[in-house]
Structures are given as C-alpha cells and as structure tokens.
Length: 242
Image (cartoon, rainbow, N blue to C red):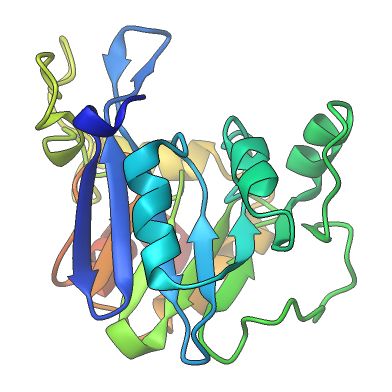
C-alpha cells in the first residue's frame, strides 16, 4: 500500500495511527491500521498491521527508536516481517499461532503469547498493559495505554464502515449489502459470541478489559472510537458480562 493512500494521525499525545484501505477477499472493505505509541522512556511500541511504506517509516523514525513490534493475533501477520527487517533490534512478539506461521518463513520471535508462561513480561508493561484472549478464535491480544486512556486491538472489536481508512482511496469504505458492524449492533454481539471458542476463558478476559479505564478504542478495522470506548466494549461483549 502506497504512502499516498495512508492516513497518518496523532490521536493523543504520543499515540499515532497509520490507516489505509484493505479489502478482505479483495471485495469487502474492512480497512487496515497500525498503531504506534511512544513510551515514557522514548522507545516506540508498534502494533504492525499495515505496510511499512515510506511515510509510515518516516513518522516512526521521527517518533524514536522502535523497540517493540507486536502482532495482535494469529491472522494479522502479513507485514510483521517488513517491520522486523527495518528494525532488527526490536523485540518481535505475537501469539503462538502467528509465531509458528512466520517461523516457517524464517522469522524469529522474542515472545509468543500462548507459549510463554503466564505473567511473562516483555518490557513495555510500565506503559502498556495487555490481555491475551486464549479463548478467542483468532487468539487476539488487547492492549491498554493508560496515559491516553486508549484500547488498541485487532479483531476483538470492529467499527465499520471504515471511512478514515478509505478517505484517500477512490474506492468506498462502505460494506456492500451489509451496512455497518459496530459494537452496538446485535450482529457484533453475535460475532463476539461465535468467535469465543472457550466461553469461560472469554468471560475472564472480557471482564479484565472491561475493568480498564479507557475512553478511546483503536481497532484495526473501522473508524476509531473517540469516546465511550469502555461502554462500546461492554455492549459488544454483553453476552459474556451478563
């Protein structure tokens, strides 16, 4: 994806997003988004989910040294190799399914959720909390940046259509024949329930995230939720919390 189609935006102090078009099956527009956070010690943490084009790399280099590259789940693995090649000194961390998939391509990981012992620390805990959803089909990890009251995630929460991600594209970000998929819809609650392969583990982890004090949600797919993010989470996962 070219720099021309990437929307780079600072959502809060030291929190930047990199949004671009991305169609599933080359048909359904869901958009893609990477998120970078500059930590209090100056290091940069990146959830890598979009191409590392020139504009993206320029902004990351301006922010500071990239020390953490995160794959948010088992399926958002397409571009982590690009990031690791550009920042070989950064720690690369992802769920074990993603690590196994990319290991076959010769990519080495410094940590793998699902394999590492519970409580393993990766070096960013003082700035960013995380919760690994072992009971979710895509093995997602939710991340919380308390300083900006921001939740960052991949497939746990959608907020479609993806207007921002297609704002520099000639294509539409609207979903054909479907309309919207946001946390307040029955469809999203049904999706969240269906994607839960271990309901008890899901109840535990959904409750953990619900206990975080966040206002903003940065999803990989769809527009950023700027306020009432915790309410949106509770609505999407209502069936696990009731």
